[in-house]
Length: 123
Image (cartoon, rainbow, N blue to C red):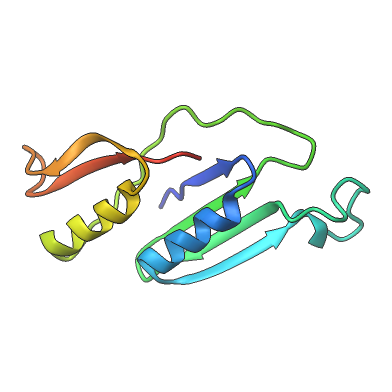
């Protein structure tokens, strides 16, 4: 059994998922609300993402925007863990994720990992 994170965005899902695809590699699929068969009128011209899927060699991440006309509540907290092959790559990924954000926990050794960090990302 596996569990796959599904992250909800407030209009910037495509941008975020494209960033993650560039950072982690893999195949990204975006399905927009306007692409729904028999889409309701308020969905017909929407660029918002109804469902996206980033599939890498070891993991899958799903995400979407809230539907057109619905503000939705921003996610208050969630964590997605990524294991990097070495500390240098882990630090490079951490720094890219942190760009423009803040760190909940700085990158460095912890009792549970040789190197770990928690950047705070906006969804």
